[in-house]
Image (cartoon, rainbow, N blue to C red; front, side, top):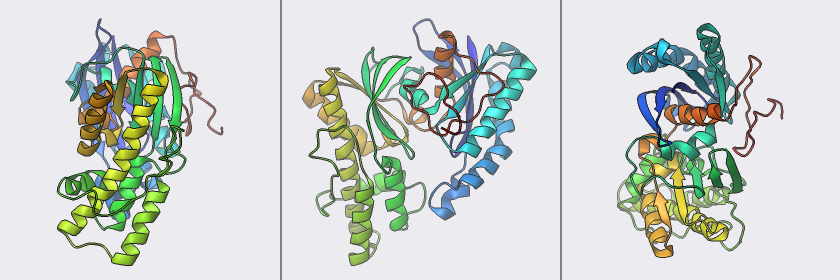
Amino acid sequence: MRILGIESSCDETAASVIETLDDGTAKVLSDVIATQIAEHAPYGGVVPELASRAHLRAIRPVIESAVSESGGWDSLDAIAVTAGPGLAGALLIGIQCAKAIALARRLPLVPVNHLHGHLLAVFLDRALVVGDRPSFPFIALVASGGHTALYRVDSPEDIRELGATRDDAAGEAFDKVAKLCGLGYPGGPMIDRLAAKGDPTKIAMPRPMRARKSLEFSFSGLKTAVAMWVERNGVPAEGAGLEDLAASVQEAIVDSLVRKLIAASVQENVPRVVLSGGVAANRGLRARAQQECDRAGISLHIPPAKSCTDNAAMIAYAGAVRFAAGHRAGWDLEAAVRWSPGERDVPPYNR
């Protein structure tokens, strides 16, 4: 079965065609992404209205390119589209295009949860950075610019949230710290690069909610701590000072994420964990997760960076899973700004 996936939940306009395989994985036949980094860089973060306009300009050529690369329209069996969570205007661009294509081509339309895509991205046929593809159940950490949460995944359709951030997401914390330091956008890759040369013990940074047994996260206090440090000391010049600050911030974020990931695995008695979301491309996080998983006897599974950041291949695969389970959308499908992966049906827009 071949499915076209469309993703437009935030600042990436993406389309992909995948073909499901008998072993439960999927072959990626095309994977086209139009990034909006240049649009949002002057503001240090995503501006929703600019994101919507950029999606509107990019979505047709992106979809046409993905379909052309994979064998044409007649080879498709269904359309999968991100219906939430995300920015309302951005989501609606993808949803309306998917509706139009499904109607014109007389194809089934499948609504997909963006986080569901991240949770199942490990099953795409791209070579994994660490480990083989996990068996069910597994514990997954989704860490990105908009989301940070832990899930127990018992099957592609049986997903339970174990804990999530109470305020900023991990990726958002990286971006805000980078903005404070004048490093540009997106901040995560820049801090990761600087941190590799810095001393993470040089500057003390808080670990919010570290002593609590809860599996929830909090990163707003870290952002405030960095802002106060910069106010007292100024932004360090390029070199050791900036590298040490980046390393200290990254250490605090990575420590929080990995500590809770291991705790979730132990609590649920599930010795398999998956890293997903854009922050999973962070080299410091990958290294620490591997170190702590080896120490705890837990198997770690990490997709390549292309499967971690927002992409439409993961949406197409999650769509294939939902299609097989009988999920379909009508022409009244709307954007779900908030939608938990544990909810099988798309919630009302005004929830």
